[in-house]
Amino acid sequence: MMMKNKKTVVMAMACTAMLMMSGCGGKTKQVAFDSSNAQSIEDVDSTIYGICGDGTAMNTLQLATR
Image (cartoon, rainbow, N blue to C red; front, top):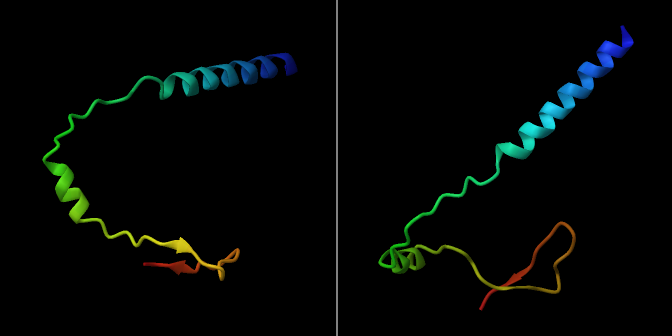
């Protein structure tokens, strides 16, 4: 009885490994780039740019903007 259970576990692990390896491979999608949208993307940028200050620690961030 123990040998049958062991074979089942090994077979299930092998099938799982094969599914994981084949599940995500080669599914890249080409998207056409329209250069007219590049300007509108830059206008919407709400990111605050700066550098880390001296008061930056493990749980805090001091951001020095210009």
